[in-house]
Length: 564
Image (cartoon, rainbow, N blue to C red; front, side, top):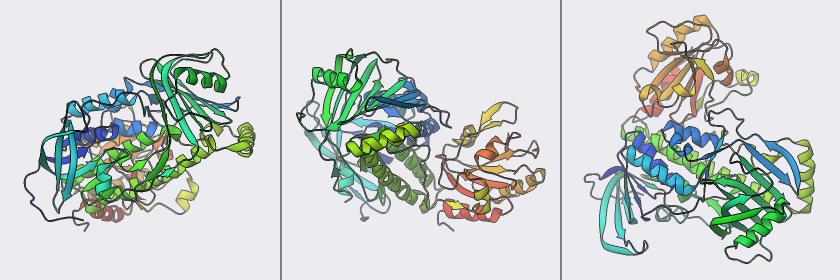
């Protein structure tokens, strides 16, 4: 609900509340797009300890698209293999890096390290960060949001000092964590569901045991009372966590001796030794997701919109999708290049995905902690038959998040269904991630489709129009006509993907696909086709090249301010 108040000058186009990984990523993404943004954070320094610490392939793609992935990777271990033991029995290891992405190895670092790196990147890109500032209220109107801020004491970050300040922005982003003040003020609080009779005990320490201590493996142990993970933490440490039945376990942080004892029992390695602990903690779990992720000019990202279970390490990674997905929408809208449907689609897409992920994580907990003898027996039998049991028992066969899809997005328009998709079962459809493929650049050098999808021609929120010739030389004139039909929208950047036709020197950016790898990846048969890809790498439109009017109508709907 909007209120009519003073609509004076703006202190920033976007103000972000919360300086955790997702708030900082939102600042990086907005600054990447040239948006004037200010991040406010109550804490004066990043929280210590590693906490959320892994990055899967798809979030790495998104972070690479805004130029910050490599900075995080420099202070991360690369994981290639996941080893799983089920009640002491080894099942087939998962080659987790063997996925169709340039960023297959999973990055493991520490949240404290990630936050510091992201803050450096945000400032380097021109973002502003004010620490020691607490949001105490906000009100939005037809043209912006007015927020009230207080400064906090240097000695006690919960103590307010001095008079309040008032700032004004066009949009407000709540990235203020699981106890989000922004979510509460929007009326989007939800009753979280608690997981009964379950506790997590955890330690970050130096590890010595008879298994590998190389920092490129994960180890998961499913034992009668629960689930244990052994994974690397930046700085030469390992994390050992135990999600288990809490019967007989004291409700307090464990001691190092207690963690070493349970670790030796679960891993069946009496030599396992833990030293130099930097973090010992315990926790219980609750989960849920907000009904909406946006109300008018105020948006939620990351934990501000959901309480995430740790199954599969998906929570922070899901927040990266939020940050990148919201930033390009705000950038286009602020530039006057987007119809309302663009910003409206954020709530539909990300809210729906968080609710789907919540259900997935619950399945993971049921498989890893709430098993019982009957399910254990079934899993043991399945382990002998299913080579990918190691990922399935965590509730998903796609921990890398490459299958994240927005099937119900209002931005989708798919005109290539029917027999075509029956013949090409793996053809990615509107809402799905656009795949990568090897192609040849105009100068004869090897390149990839991804190189031409993200930030096309240097435009950070550009949309890439891939025009496939369908392995037909005669298709080129139709592809040129399709480009002419959308030349009025500067954000649409055309790319010819040619498996047979030969482009002229004055044609659009041309990618040679004589071996048909890109055609195959996109499920393109012998009919010339148009694929429009969004700035975040998801397919928005699919259509035939000889029907450019459908593409033009789509562009009117999405890019014209009145959706004409």
